Length: 208
Image (cartoon, rainbow, N blue to C red):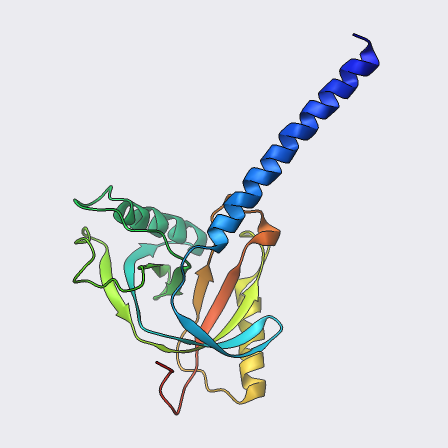
């Protein structure tokens, strides 16, 4: 076989492998997009900003210490061991999104996995030491959406942008920010969905 034919053979083979990789990655991405989230209604939306009314949901929570990115990795591992049945006796728990993170003092972070709809401490497996099941009451959040892998964005900048948008609308902030991450490290940064949530005050109850 000539050198030219060999070159075309390798190019064709490489193209096939790349095409299969892209197709597999797309299927994985679409599967992640279909991961269940807490029930909510979008009250208003403007570009990357939104006001969303979340209904009650339950979380598994752990506390991690240290720099934020290291803390969320540590907290994620602890919670993953719980939902995948590695740290307790009983059934596994389906993965949902997002993973939630909230500062709880200096170098102390609350990391939370959202539990599936309809689950509570009465139906979920008993968590191990270091993991707590907690209800999150329904409420309204101001939300800003942005893409990127860690290092591609600045959470403080995104939070300030959201606070500015809420201030322009006359919304009253009613709690600390929560960081929400929807995708696994396998998803490329530009396709990832990240959010900052800030609770806002309501004169009327959140929709039920």
